[in-house]
Image 1 (cartoon, rainbow, N blue to C red):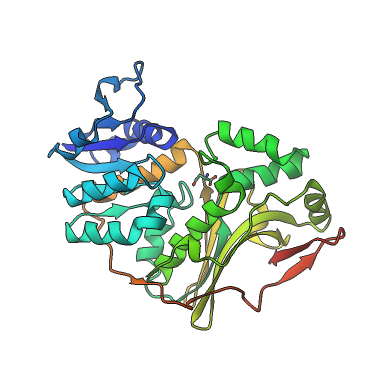
Image 2: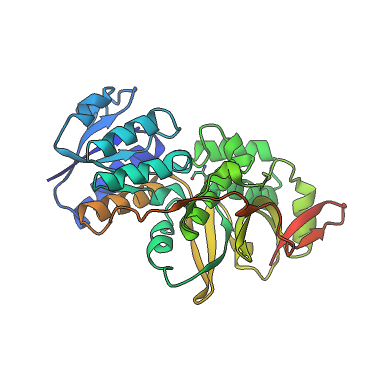
Length: 350
Ligand code: HSE
């Protein structure tokens, strides 16, 4: 039997229960959610008796070999993840803020203890992109990663275009649907996308890159219904695009709303879907597309990581280096721009 503990029983944590109940037997017939850490109680839930507010109960339970951190934030989530790894437990998470801020330390501590710190669900929701980037692109130099990495803003921009809805009205709906962050400012201001592109770029370029080192991050707050309409007149859409582009030996990283050309595959990415284009010097362009947010898609990615540790197919991470000063550059001279009929200038994605 494999005993696991889930830390945080919100949108993603409860989704992990759902997915394991539905499909857990596919990879491990004896998987058991032994503890659920949450300050709330869930009296009507079938696992109500497993809910505890005491993390030490989980830490000291030698039978728990996998800890699933779906709490969010970088306070208790970091502290508990570190303690679990030091105690020789694998940690699986969807928490990009924690991966971005403490990933270097947590991966190192995991490797020192012969366990894994896995975070497939931290980028792209249900889309498997981190494991492929770590494992399948080894034969490539990654020239560009570009994508729509935030489901909330994509959902909002889609509905502003199709229904003429106001941005703030759509934020509320995205929250109700479980797409938005606890503080949706992180979605709207591009910070969530920044964390995700920094995680992907770091893996692709063998370094730890913090989102705080990204020189240009702009969200969708200034995108108006008129901008969207004028872009649509040209067959284009406006989308929040995160990019990491290799320029010589340096990396240009940015997050910004772009006018996306009708010919681009990203043009048809609507609702809360994400799409990530990875271009290698040998393989060319590879596209990942799928549900970028929401309880079950994100939980499915978490459960995929649980399966990888339970079946032994995941190995502790290869060491990466710190990001040297000057490696991340502010602007890419090849960046293309377009001016809308109302005079507003946008970045242009073809
Ligand atoms: N708030 C995030 C999004 C959740 O909308 O994409 C998934 O990371």
